[in-house]
Image (cartoon, rainbow, N blue to C red; front, top):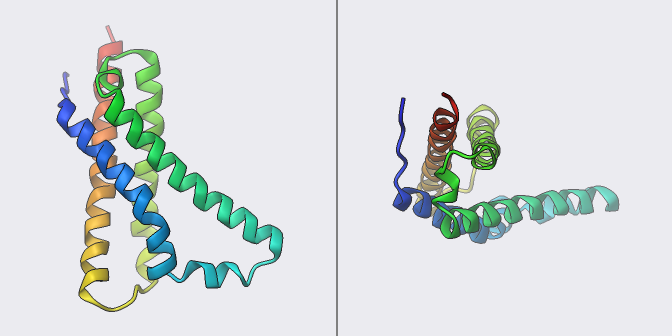
Amino acid sequence: MSIDVPVWAIVAGGVGQIFTALVYPYIRHRVFDWYTDVRKLKPLNQEIAKTYGRYIVGLNFAFGLIAILLPEDLKNGTTLATALTGLIAAYWVGKVATQFAYYPMYTIPPGAVFKWGGYGMNLLFGFFAVLYSALLLSNVSQLLP
């Protein structure tokens, strides 16, 4: 089985991931009023929550840079490409699973911008999950005899 993921799709995924990294702080602040909730935590727990938020932004940005700068390396069938695309695929598949398993219980602010923004972000997350899963399968198929 041979899966060829086009370079343009990998680069588009990278641009999308950088976009999510840049918009994530706005979403936390404006859509979810996250900082108001974080202030209710004990000081150490506040810092832990903020640190995890920074990890998410940093990972999204780093994955995006890797995809934009090294798209061919993400699909070359090496063990490193397989490991990295496996990691990124697990990250995004986990995000999508979490999004649909837990987030529907919560409401976002009313308004078309938030409604359509939510649809757009979910589409992006789904695209990332499919993209990196396809890259993982492509890399695994190249490793197999």
